[in-house]
Length: 163
Image: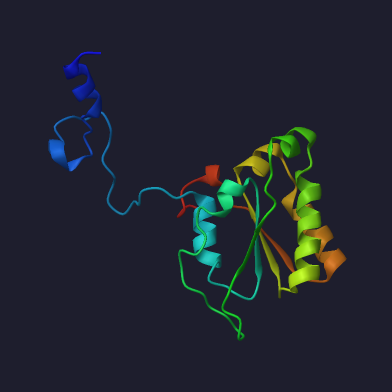
């Protein structure tokens, strides 16, 4: 590549340094925020609730995407939040083990930590795989006696403000 071709690749219309001289990429629209999927928005909204266990059903990378970016509210003395993930990997997806891992994760969390409820966040991988989050939540709630709430906000559903 020639020098001027490389410079052309670096010239972005939304950047301040070129004073919006080109129209190749659109600049952010007023009121819109950069980044953040529907899953991110769900966690931003619900993570301040400290009395429950927050279980991210998906790959481990999704669990850290929004963790601890807001304060914490509690109806009791506990202000620390419990965060977990099913840590789905390629083998789980290929073998269809997502729902089973989710059910066992809920049972383990309830037995070990005794949360007031369990919030289960759906992510892109199990949503594309077709995991029945509602059915697993019902079965887990029946088995444990603790409210298990499905938060169906997979990232590809839209931005963090869309669900």
